Image 1 (spheres, rainbow, N blue to C red):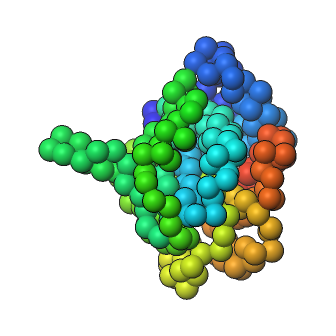
Image 2: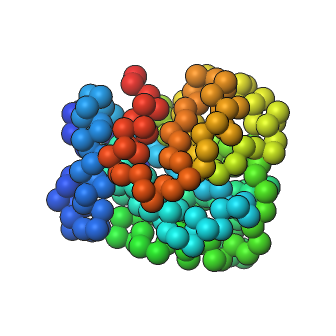
Length: 239
């Protein structure tokens, strides 16, 4: 992320999006409209996407719902962060490791999905990870915090905005609650994007003030970009 003073413009222009990722133009425009409605054009944040890779998520990977969400978050991030990238990570019972190990390249919790290199990227990453598992939130949250604390955004006091996608309540509910309660004063906003029936995520609604929920229902592909963004912007820090 290149750090610069805040002003009332998007981090990346429509012209640049059109030149690097023309298929995302409509999403970018819809995201901009939602941000303008709540006077948040010009806000800066380090945007993350965390994706549930439990067994019950398989159909959402197959039907393209996770890829679409990744595209939506990348388009949203283009208004908030000028590097054109979103760190994406996958979790089940633990945080999955991405990339090959070795002397010069260690496995990592996040890889960047970027404008122009986004098409089919979720399927590529998902297929490289092998067995799917259960649903534990805390390992993924700890990985986000570690990545954010090592970033230039953290050093510049730019907040992190984490789109945390899942289709099930956490198996580690107590550990998740303890982590969120102990870190509620940190500069990280956890915006959950549940796939499925909203009431099964009731545990999230009673968590600290740095947690929000933007449920999308059982058929996330049926939810318009505009509606998703209208839900996401409620979680952006205003100061």
